[in-house]
Length: 299
Image 1 (cartoon, helix red, strand yellow):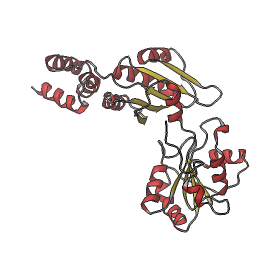
Image 2 (image 1 turned 90 degrees about the horizontal axis):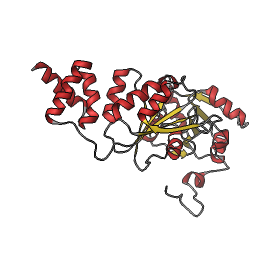
Image 3 (image 1 turned 45 degrees about the vertical axis):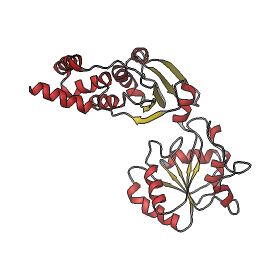
Image 4 (image 1 turned 90 degrees about the vertical axis):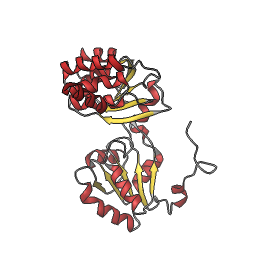
């Protein structure tokens, strides 16, 4: 259960500071729908219609949203490729007392998108930053997954290359909470296979196209999900992959058994991949096993 708002009706500081129905000066971080347009909140709609400028990850995407709700607001593109160049001008407008809205293509800004750099800069400069909360694929997927949500770790997208992906998964093997990943449709099968190899038969959920017409939430053990998707064509749409937490008492390789397993894995995969494969079973960091593998190989 999340904490309630302040005041008798949950009135926020931003509402109290409104003048003439306009959003208060500062940067407003506005969540937008991840699929179903009905999820755009009245407050988000009011904010987007009242600010001096909307900062959009892709002005074409946000333009369609604003047009759908008959909102006429000036827009400026703000994304990874132009952030360094346009940020000073944005900060100058905030310093002049303007109200600006930051949106991403879908969902809550600053989660796996470049908006956090602007929020960080605005706060460092002393400008107010307000949350206008709403849809989030991360929260939505967790809420319907049936996996523990009291502790979770948001990884975002895994590396595209197989070796880097194995290393990243190995480093996450002992995280004591549900793991949350974003994934592209064409990489889902490879990611499920790598996760099954790294984590074993943990519970997992593939949540696809959340809030959209073809929403799908598929649960099962990682090896079973990997086998199922291996026989299907690449799925379409936006995907969130959730993996249940590590067992509290997982069997660990240690001593002579670890050394024997490491020698065999090195002969099969090489030191780096062997360390990544065995790290979850040994309960030790990949880099520690890599150093051990090099030492044994050298000996």
